[in-house]
Amino acid sequence: TINLQDQLIHKDIPDLKAALGIDLRATVLKGRANYLCPRRLENLRRRGPQDPDEMRVLAKILVWLQDTQSGDRSEINLNGPTEREVWARMCAEDEGCTTENCVKRTGGACPFHRARMASQSAHLLVVNHALLLADVATGNRVLPDYDYLIIDEAHHLEDATTNALSFKVTQSDVERTIRELGGPSSGALGWMLGTMKDILPPSDYAQVDHLVQRATDQAFQLDNLARRFFDTVDEFLFEMRDGRPVGPYSHQERILASTRTQPGWPEVEMAWDEAERTLHSLLEIIAQLLQVLVDLLENLPEGSEDLYSSMSSLYRRLTELHENLDALVFKPTEDRIFWAEIHPSMRLSLHAAPLHVGPLMQKYLWNEKASVILTSATLTAAGEFDYVRGRLFAESAYELALGSPFDYESSTLLYLVNDIPEPNDRAGHQRAVEHSLIQLCQATGGRVLTLFTSYDQLKRTSQAISTALAKYDIRVFEQGEGASPTSLLDTFRSTERAVLLGTRSFWEGVDVPGDALSVLAIVKLPFDVPSDPIVAARAETFEDSFNQYSLPEAILRFRQGFGRLIRTQSDRGVVAVFDRRILTKRYGQAFRDSLPVCTVKVGSLADLPRTAAKWLNI
Image (cartoon, rainbow, N blue to C red; front, top):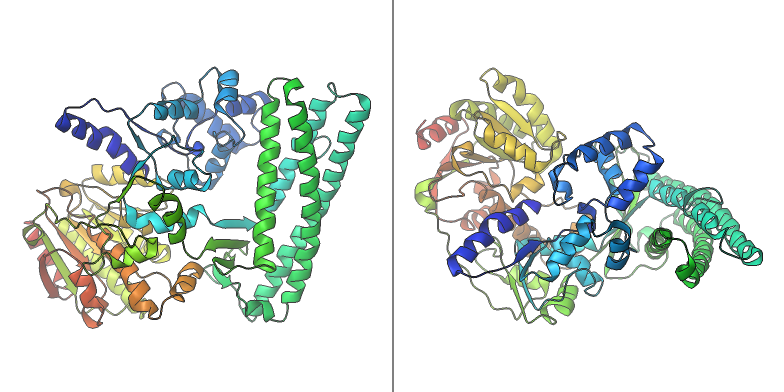
């Protein structure tokens, strides 16, 4: 995460340099989308904001530019998906841009290329998992050459690789791409005609004009056919769920061999077949237009590289669409997972993801580098590395497990609630959690981080406890209120009487040392949702999927959550588990055994507030 990168650059590496007494050059490099592109910003300023969102983000950026040295988006607060979408139109994520072109067009002012140049001369380069995997996927075209690799938070590597190699598309995505492609007087095609008009002889220009007209016709047809295809998939899924409404949660349907034998699937195939033929034709025309640009690049006016970049990006996105949807409908492979998802708003999206990532790790990292070290506080389940070894195809790796520097037995009270309804009694469990959190926060004066496994339960809990706690001058902060996780944590740290409600991303990477965080409440044992398409597909590869897959995954996440509480040797706190299964189920022992030796108390909900206050000397 960006938080961990900043901690390494500003704290850990300076400490290392001081301890070793060496002059070590270290820098951080993030993905292109994290940096502002001066050229794209200038283009937007020149044409003017097209809507209030663009105007608002542009104003934010112009103010921010007075102070920023890095052009890094982590320095600016972008609220919600709309503002982030505007940022995407101004960031440096331009695949066709090269260092030479950038220096020529911006005089070396591009934040991304400044960061990349710094990375070339660094002894130590800090990147996130996504950028590392982008480098792997592109054959080392993103990062400088390296032989030695340390992967921190390596328990995330499988998920990060899965995300990097996954595909998602909606009808809106297709429409947006076609809109960007445009026609004779708009978009990339209109840009191309305007650029060529004064360069080519009339006969050559007529050929380009003909290609643009054909591309426009094919794009118009594709827009209609793609809409028909998505509508057909939507109707098919409606029949698959027997006409039931989607409800408050997204409905996910894996596309399996058995799915393709269902009534209604032939209509899906026919709809895609029509769209695919048109898409294939459009790609052929765009390829011809790209070749025209390549042949004329030396004679094109300054800035025409931007046109080539735009056309190349459109070609790549349409190719990716073609390959993935063709595989989903007609040509599935055993190493890919396919599914459709309908959001409660009835927006349909189609997805693909890799079944296994271990072979990729083995081929491009374990076998290629001089040394790879995987580190994490949670690489073991039941004290063994076997699970992570198997998932990452790292069977021959050496291993080392180090003890914690913290004295958990004297610093940490693990309170296991024995009289709370089990989570399958949703209403009863929810009422008990709400009531107990109010009592607990009153007793401790806040200072509580509560970890949930579902955002829906987090929202319901927030609504139920906020007013009651406000009477005691205790503020409730919740993940997803619009603020970034970093700013939310900063506010929580600086607020004397507060409770913070977090879900998946807050199970790790949260660092709140001292009295600001004294109680960690774990609402449920963090099992994955078994119906999640990726979880379900991977579970099928095990003989005993619960014990070999679901349980180790949940234990790793549980240990990550537990680790949020004690961050320094002087910290003291309480971990309260509101899931009775840790006591009543056979697998509960595995969760308890995964933790360091603590002071453990099994007790009632009613006794928790008093016991916690006593442990904290309140």
